[in-house]
Length: 294
Image (cartoon, rainbow, N blue to C red):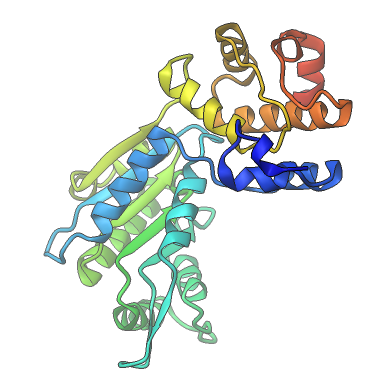
């Protein structure tokens, strides 16, 4: 089948539309990046931080949003776009972006161990907190990261106020010593946790990813999704269809992607090869695709 026939799709998706049903379904189920304006704005802010010249007090960023709004996907995309490189002149590895997931609770020693693992350094046996701190700082200084990303920062609130304060002091210390921006990622609770350190929170700019509403940006998101899904016929998303998608998913990005992908798979399996307004209008079939919450 000639891929030129699939002009309703992005050029990269056209050859995929010519593949078998099973292969197309497998591609739909795989993780993939879908660009949209709010994500692009977040990526631009991360780019600006990465290019920021070192100074005594570096700017920081908090990406905040409900679970499933695509925060982690954005920072993973940014990290992929700035991979590690080996410097043949110095004989050292340069990691522009170091991304770690917050440990469950404000435990400084475990966090330093996570950082060491993220840069591929072996964990010293029976190391004290001070040894872990000095080792991590020395190795990070050699690697010269441009940005440190800490995901799931809301896990801080699992500790006592005193533990949270100590952990935030450590983050401030890392940023000051390395002279690099910190990017924290989390839910609304992350913002509350950072507020316990007045000095640190003043250096953070908050960037929110609110749930989607039925507006022009949402239409753009669905348009991008539609052009990326390897369906052989153009889908129909009327305004009522877009409104229905918001109602069913609560405007959560992960739910929207999951539902539209499930509708696309159903369209391939039925031979319809397109998502129609009637497929979204049928409440029972949509709920069956989404699944009952646990």
